[in-house]
Length: 261
Image 1 (tube, one colour):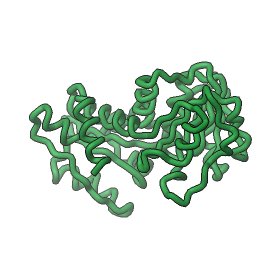
Image 2 (spheres, rainbow, N blue to C red; image 1 turned 120 degrees about the horizontal axis):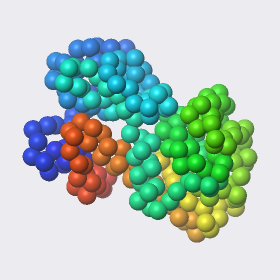
Image 3 (tube, rainbow, N blue to C red; image 1 turned 60 degrees about the horizontal axis):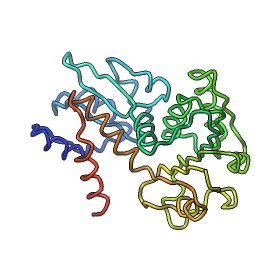
């Protein structure tokens, strides 16, 4: 989608993949960035947290909140500024779907990297209550602490079992775990908890319809997968690198074509 956006503006730029082993992360930041004359780049797992140590320029509030960076800009003075566009990308997709967490009961499954961005984005919309679950309770406790630090007025609660998410009383349910990517993966929540009036968002976009989304549709829920979040986090990154408005339709078309390939 980035190369399609570059072509749209007739820019002499190319979006390439750099496979970097964890032990080579320092060399990438300290040598490769300059050698390859990079203007900016994305950072993905497993480097989103470790890359922060190599940022020498401005660090955005979203990076500070999520303890993770996914977009780096090489400034004119050579410094490296960092941002995290995942949360805002998620929020933009919700807005496009006319969904808001304001004054709603929200249940979030997962407390890892993607879940942090989603949790802080949801907290920023001032939900009535935010419930968090992950099998790793240490991650849950850490995410609860983050939400309370940056959004002290939001009622957030970590739960020890998925049944304690109170999905029957929730308005929004988000899956921010990888469960659902494989055919053998189980349905994350009891189907009887899904109900009309519940908006179900699964960050997984491949497959396009997970078992959770299929069950939610059968229960009359409004649903969405994570393709919109992927699109908008990319649009935001493009705008930070180029100072040009992202050609959303062009990027969406390229993304959809790649997904069908």
